[in-house]
Image (cartoon, rainbow, N blue to C red; front, top):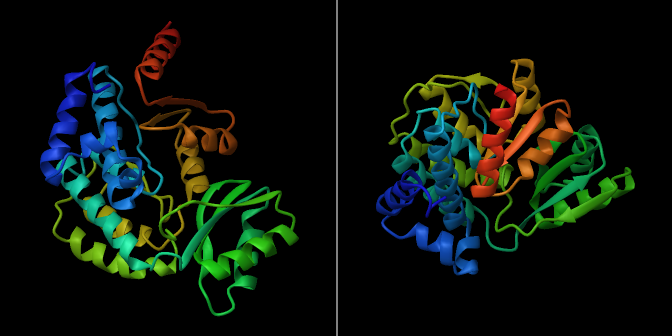
Length: 293
C-alpha cells in the first residue's frame, strides 16, 4: 500500500509528524522487540489501518457502520470522522504507555478459553478470583473468551475452565492484562488525556465495544473509550447488533484477518473480506465488481 498509493504514504508521513518519531520506520523495519511494546504497537497498527482505509475511500468504499476491536475502535473513529489521525495516533501512543505502566511486568496475564460457553468462563473466573482479579476481557466468539487479571488468578481460572469442559486454554503472550480491573490506573490517566482531545459527532454510526450500542455523538464516544479500558470487549454482541441493523458484509481493514474469522463464527451467513495489502485489495475490487454484475 505504502509504495503504490500516495494517500497511504501521506498517512505514514502525517503519523510520523504527529508522534515526533518515525513510526513508519518501526512498521517497515522494526526492530521486532520495539514494535511489540504496546506503546509502539498501538500507533503502528492504527497507522497501517488508516493508510489502508484512505486507499479504500479513494476507490469508493464507504461503510454504513464502523466498529473496531479494542484498539481498532480508534481506527473506526477516524473512519467515522470523530477523530483526526494526528489526535488518534497521539492518544493511542499514550494509551499504550498508560496500560504498560498500570501493572508491573509479570504480575498480570491473559489466556484464551476455547470451546466453553461464556457464562461458564465467567463462573470459572468467579470461582478462581480468591481475592485477586480475573474476569472476561474479550468475548470474541461464542466458543472463544479471553480472560485477564492477576497471573495467579488467571492460572486458577484456566484450570477451572478446563474442569468445566474447555477444549483448550491458551496463555497469551501479552505485555499487560488488558480490559480488566487492573487497568484502572490506565483508565483514569486516559480519561484526563481524552478530555483534551476534540471529538466530532460521527458521520457513520459506531457500534462500541463496551456496550455494543450504536453511537453517533462525539462526547458519548469519548466516555465509551474510557469505559473500554477496564470493560470486556463485547465483540459477539457488536457483530450481532450490526447484523440486526442490516449489515451483511464485513470488511476488515488493516493488518491480519483475525476479526474476519471471528465474524464467520458469530454470523456465518455474512460475507467477510479483509484488506491488508495489494492482493486483498484487488480481491475486494473483484468481489465488488461481481456483486454489481
